[in-house]
Image (tube, rainbow, N blue to C red; front, side):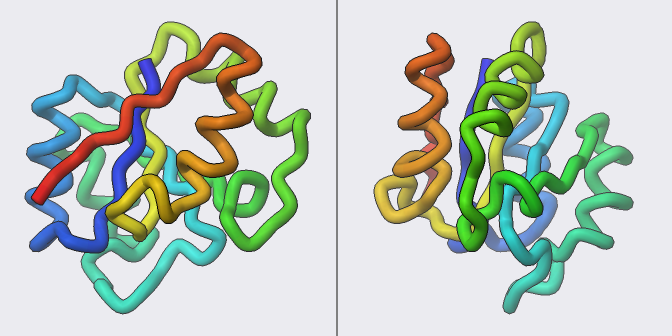
Length: 123
């Protein structure tokens, strides 16, 4: 099962961990082109060390699946195959999936491989 989430309105990394654990998510796939931002608690180095302590693997895939790069069909297909049998979540900054490449680019293109993405709504 594949989910997506935007961390923009989350208070802290603990809130992210709680949401992921509640959904049974075991892998967070960071699809930001640049894995850092204004909210330093969501920077790559911090996610790499804090998520595993909560039982969640962290992977950065922004080089191939980031919003500032041209996403190749081959990489969409690889993601479709990779996610089978896993409970994973795509993460970017934008909370609203309608305004993010998680939905407008990746989820839309995954449909042709029979993969649906469940966008996690949160306050």
